[in-house]
Length: 140
Image (cartoon, rainbow, N blue to C red; front, side, top):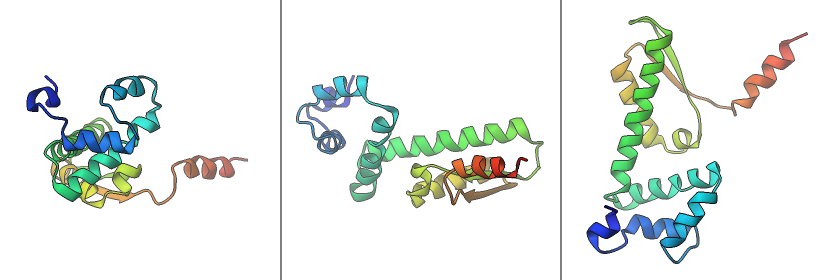
């Protein structure tokens, strides 16, 4: 059952998303979501972060908590696959969700360190494409 059906009203986060997308009707979201690009869909994350930060929105906060849990769990599972227990693993934080939301990133980092204590975490200071450019420049 949808939250709006359960509550009988459209939730504030839903209203925020409609306003962000400049839509008047929740039904418009269905059509939009079917044709939206990956980056258009991802742009809604900023609305969720804003709702969580400004009013501790009852939908946004659990979404972000779950997202931090999944990201950290996936990171630790990657470490399990590439390193032995006790080995130091470097995690590079990339993407606007992590780089532009320090509190969220701190939560992810804390969970990664709990799951893989021998971890080193650092933000990627330049877009990842620069790694490819540098590698290409090194080939003769």
